[in-house]
Length: 305
Image (cartoon, rainbow, N blue to C red; front, side, top):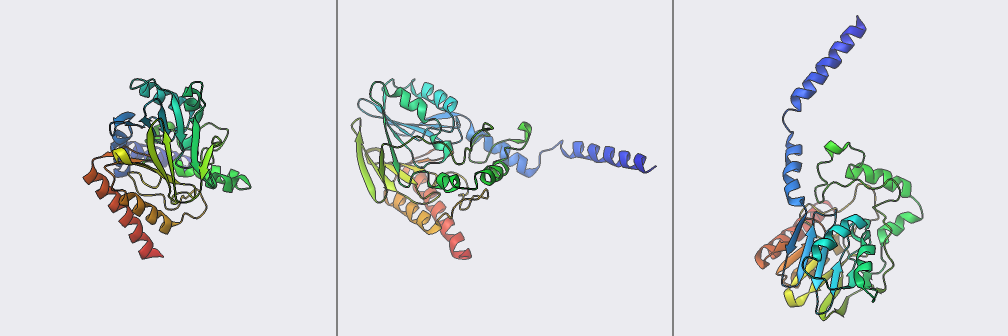
């Protein structure tokens, strides 16, 4: 009798679950709506800047110079980078002269090989900020296993495919079993700076690389003054900022993060290219969104700390 009652209850539970699943929950609906923002897309932001969003968890950007290209961030995996490079080749066949990595996270550095190989006879330079890959290096001495386990929970890697709608700031991607995408295996930079601003000229393009501690201690932003484009790295994306990653990370200095956003706003950008999600084109919207983002972080800091 007990077994019969148990089987009946299980059947009823399954039936109710099916009925309840006929309509999406509010959270599921919001995620599905978000997916439209994360579809693969190439956006021409300014005369010389193209941005590939949605092809990889992190954005990949191209600046077209006089005789070559500058790539800002490279995506998570080589196949992602290959698809983006194929799209960029519809715009130009110039060789890659330089790669700029806004920080060391694996979703921004994993496709570097593809763009290095697109440099022709001259190997591209790789610009980054010291201490490069600071968050990844923190776990190399211990805690890699725990970080990977918690990271899989945070990003939903353990969910079945049908429940991986998206990751909010990025399309859902299943990483390989080996390695740790949160720690990454970034290429060795050829040119590093630590503080202040590093001015560079590549393929006739003047750029400023600005130290911008925030989501990571090795974060930088790129300022393309001629066309007033700021590449924010992960100090900004169109979603609530990861002020603390629940997978476990070193402390993210919120006050420095706020100051980094202040510095970007002081540039008076006409266009904003985030580390994830689609770029923002137009001065009014760019300044408005960056200001709200900065003020929201300041509000949380003031109310909690």
